[in-house]
Amino acid sequence: MSSMRMSIPIFFASMAFGFHALAAAPSPAVQAEIETLMNALESSGCDFNRNGSWYTAADAKKHLLQKLAYLNDKITLKSAEQFIEVGGSKSSMSGKPYLVRCPGATPIESQKWLLLRLNEIRGSATPLPSNPK
Image (cartoon, rainbow, N blue to C red; front, side, top):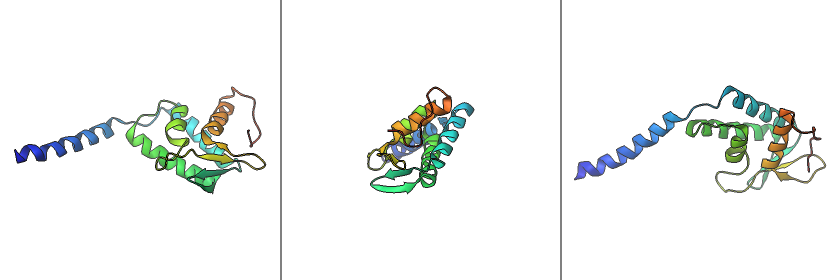
């Protein structure tokens, strides 16, 4: 019986590692869109709020790229929108939405800001100033 109890945690541990092995990097097109989006954030001149503290856009990019690396170990992202939804919109720790504050503009949720930028990158929206409302 004790060998059975010991094998259960081993089973669950092996399942966790097995799922890890199933995750793959996003397609090259998705990777390129996310990279372009992160570069747009970095060069925006906007600030980024995480859990009540404001950070530079460069720090925001670094943080979001760390989240991207973590997500790539867990799931295969199918789109830049999925990355925004699961990685770029709120804190994994507190659940609070991230905010973006551009010069002269009211802060908006990062999900909205990132989706607007993604649409600009894709050319499917009229380019907006660096402070969309």
